[in-house]
Amino acid sequence: MKKFLAILLTLTFVFALTSCGGSDPAAKSEGVMTYAEYDAAALDSEVVIEAYVQGKQSWWEDKATVYAQDPDGGYFIYEMACSAEDYEKLTVGTKIKVTGYKGAWEGEVEVMDPTFEIGEGTWIAEPTDVTALLANEAELIKHQNKLVSFKGMTVEAVEYKNGEPGDDIYVTLSLDGVSYSFCVEVYLTGPDTEVYTAVGALTPGAVVDVEGFLYWYQGANPHITSVTVVG
View 1: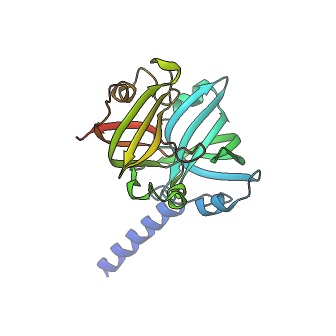
View 2: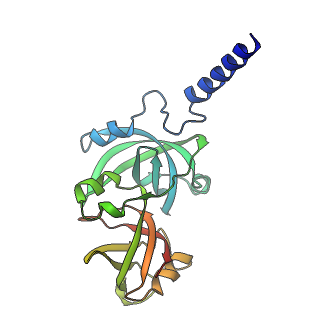
View 3: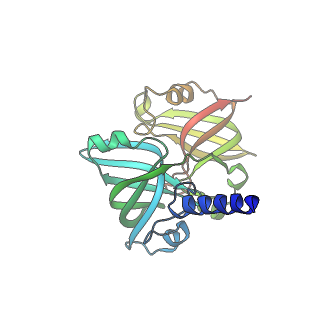
């Protein structure tokens, strides 16, 4: 009897945590879309999502641009109404509920004209290895805006926008003889960051593992957040 009661209490506790979203990062509040519903929504339609901040790209004139994610997909939340005080609260892992409109620009799907509120609970995504999908754009795009990784890439070229440090870095990496475009986005990881310095020091022929957000601009254009030289 005691064993039965212990199991019953445990199940009740787990159910309570799950139902309020306290322990399940995939749980959604009432009226909030799942990632599948968001993905299927028409462009220009209103969307309501819940996700966890994974990267802060910029804040300017009370507007914040962030990468967010839940266990099922990633979101690029563009120019979200946000005070400087609230921007400081948006640390990596923070849960937010966002209301806006689904838009797209040059292939990049984003939440536009968004407002938000901070929720309870935290969750930090692990990078998804999508190296094998580089040659399959139809599958790769399903991971758009997620934190991803690419392994064993060969450096072909590193160029600063406008020709000198201080702006974006355009990086060409190859795998199996095919070249791909990457970027160090200065608003996301500026000149004072470790990754900006590390990428600027890369030389052609080096073999690297990289992590970043799978941004899209007329095709995949990942924004690098970490680089490790492996060969």
